[in-house]
Image 1 (cartoon, rainbow, N blue to C red):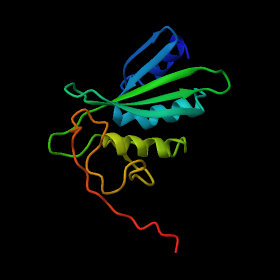
Image 2 (cartoon, rainbow, N blue to C red):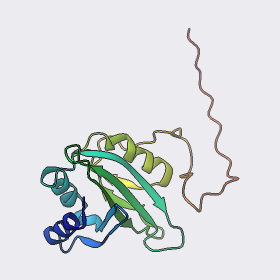
Image 3 (cartoon, helix red, strand yellow):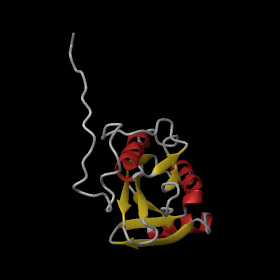
Length: 164
């Protein structure tokens, strides 16, 4: 992607793109969570970004918005790459940060969104199977959050793995 492609994205979604930059081949657009799905569908269907490289999250504890979900896209035809970021607020005493799933657009997002949910507690609305993927179901909390107590003790769950 180039600066011209970023400008096309901004022109197509003037209210959705919060900011963008194109520095040293690092093309990034920050979009609003409520229009993420439309932006991602446009990037896949019209702009040619047919490959979702990965989905991850970042916890900026003490900053608003606290979380960012980061999507790395690639066009297999042109080799262009694009990073999409979505800032998510965490509500005090309310629901966790939420954003729409893109697993229906790129099936590979399924497990990657589950990992972000497991590690950060970010909910992907519309996800077909949002449950823990790395930690066991009884695990309390989300270990990659900056406010997760590193000395926290977890419940010991004994499993019967006998082959009999």
